[in-house]
Image (cartoon, rainbow, N blue to C red; front, side, top):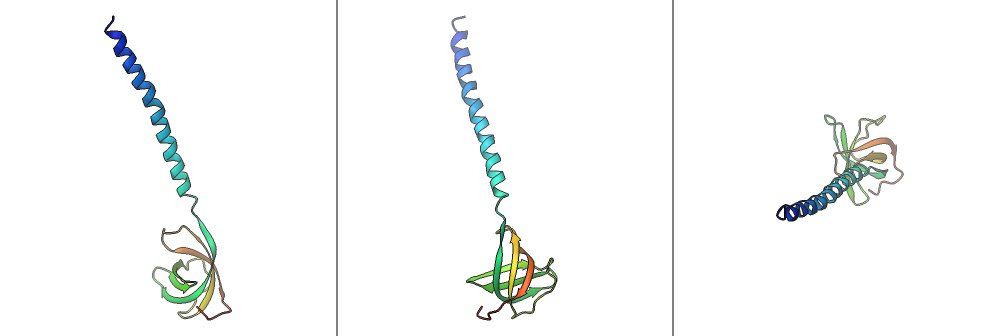
Length: 111
């Protein structure tokens, strides 16, 4: 009996430390997954159309110091290369083309 008591205490201590560590890990991973889903970009971008890909239905627009690729699937018209446009868009950065939702002719040709 004297040999069983220390073994029992060691096992009890190991089990008590392992339980909270496992729970903490699962909560942390759940938080990191939910925060990754919230990175939805929304905005407006004005620039000059530099390329159009009719097969993938995308257009490349350069302006404001950036070059961005937009999906044209939701647009009511496709602009011409060289045209200066203002696009309203949504999308997740780094996950393919941004979704252009509206297009209008821009006032300035300085892009």
